[in-house]
Image (cartoon, rainbow, N blue to C red):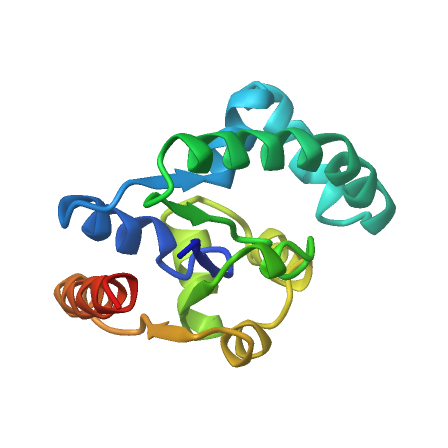
Length: 173
């Protein structure tokens, strides 16, 4: 069963996936692929434009998404049990490729706080990035499994463990 993790920026997907990795699940992350395609300096420069200019964002996505999808597909072909991590899964309309979609959601205030505190963004930058993505409630409504991440890291670890058990049971019939 092809499985994907999605969720908004700063919702806790990376930490959730690190817990899944420790439980024996490999992950293939679209953000990691995107970062490998664009040098860090250029990413920072592009971010100042694309999150405030929808046309520029669409143009960038049209250039990058085919290669990102190709690399995800290749990785999943090599390891069919790996889990894809695609933050913009619904936005790019790739959700039909997956049997199981798990969305990690967090309150808007927690997301903003994480982007400002951990990533050093201004409130304006953080708001612009949130505005560029589909609302988390809509993603959750379209998913088979939802992880609420508004608690502690230990609570998220426990939720990852429960998800791993659920996923194994689904995969094993």
